[in-house]
Image 1 (cartoon, rainbow, N blue to C red):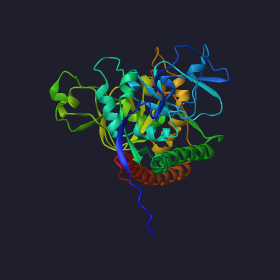
Image 2 (image 1 turned 135 degrees about the vertical axis):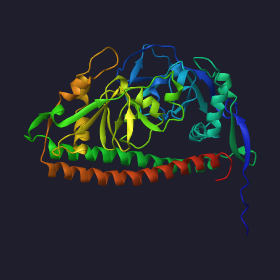
Image 3 (image 1 turned 180 degrees about the vertical axis):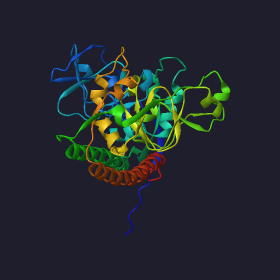
Image 4 (image 1 turned 45 degrees about the vertical axis):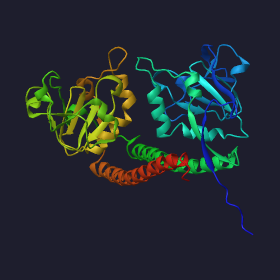
Length: 397
């Protein structure tokens, strides 16, 4: 006897349709936030990170309104500001939570809709494109409850009923793909932690001779060619490193270039590959990196080059990173920290035996190879997830 093949029909259903929603587009509480009381969490738009997860820091509401209590499976949409369109699926941790007024709640009929299915839809290029199209061209973009309720979601149907099993199948596939993607990120974090522990084991609590950084390193900073002179920038071929570029472990490429004329008519100057760089101003102050390319820098970057073979540049890089908080504590200025080149030059650095520094460098090189392999895997996992999430909502899985 032949078994009948299930026929899936895909229909577009508005998010706020009362057939799939118990609560459609409800705004949150207007209560103010106070210190976390250990009992009730208050979820605000700023508590949701770029990945839709809740940040660790918690606050409580100034007043408790039962109608704003969240239930497992509630889906929250950010309605205003830079994060408009961002979503968070509330999974609960056993404690009570309320949501704030810049968030909009949808609660689904779980006999017909898997909330995870809708959440994954809000991560598709189609949804993100919809968000972009709805954002008004004003300083403070906004998407209201009515607009969110009108989003058309592709829902699988079987025999004229919403097919919950098909939704759950899709969710399981996407969850597995997402775990693969997250594994790569976690692996990199573990490798970084391992390097920190190796550095501490080799170099801390040892009575190595200390010398002033200026005695063992050449230091310099660059400059910025005039932005009003097009000939300093147009069709430039010389890489120009800014302090914001130092957020990467190593600098292999940049997004701004200057011309020979810009170089000659400014304080910008060349640095050679394997030069250590430290940001001196603003939000990135104290951040360090190593340039793997011949380039120039601006005035917010201090370049350090060992002038004595007793100092290995990789040891110098990781020593500076280990001293990040201390270096920032030496900064001056108002809201944004500023570190002078003089402060950097006056730092006292321990000088371990060169063979020990070289041993650490070999370990770093091995870890870098491992991170490159992780990066390839992570890239493949990202592509897999993006491909699957698009196919899922086209009925191609």
